Length: 122
Image (tube, rainbow, N blue to C red; front, side, top):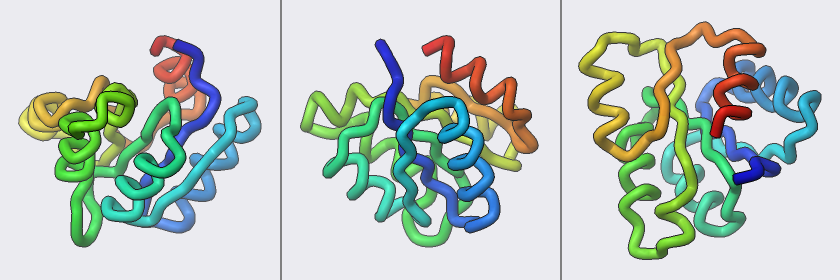
């Protein structure tokens, strides 16, 4: 699978801009969403190749949004890989994220190199 378009779902404008900048500089097309509801809507509309999802968000949290995507009746949506990124770093958080359908779980702070390596490994 070749990753070209990445959706960043992150409520913090600063972190959203930082992630977008790193990904754009690496040659990816970047879509953004500020919360889980918007993230699910953008993923359904634009069908990115990958979703980077924060866990802690108001409204629909990252676990719920990941579940909405990975368990979608639309097979094309359900196949979009999701990587969760969060300050929540307990083993139980990671296990729960993977059970929701995420393919990976990164704990902040994530270095640019680590992020890009994880994306390249998909």
